[in-house]
Image 1 (cartoon, rainbow, N blue to C red):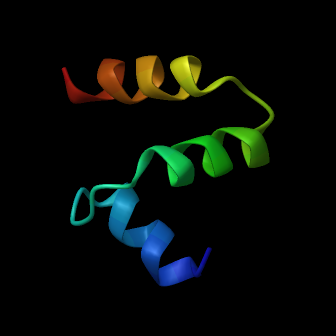
Image 2: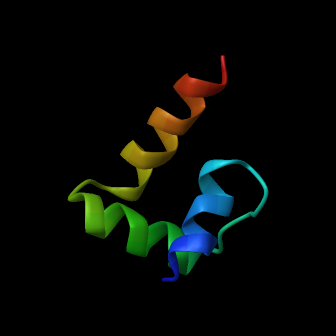
Length: 44
């Protein structure tokens, strides 16, 4: 995954596919549901 693509996800400019969500979660060592839960908490 290219760093500019990942940066776009972090800034909310890109919407990652299910596969890329799984890759990010795996790289962070957490489950995908935990990644999404944490993202949701940061929204509000």
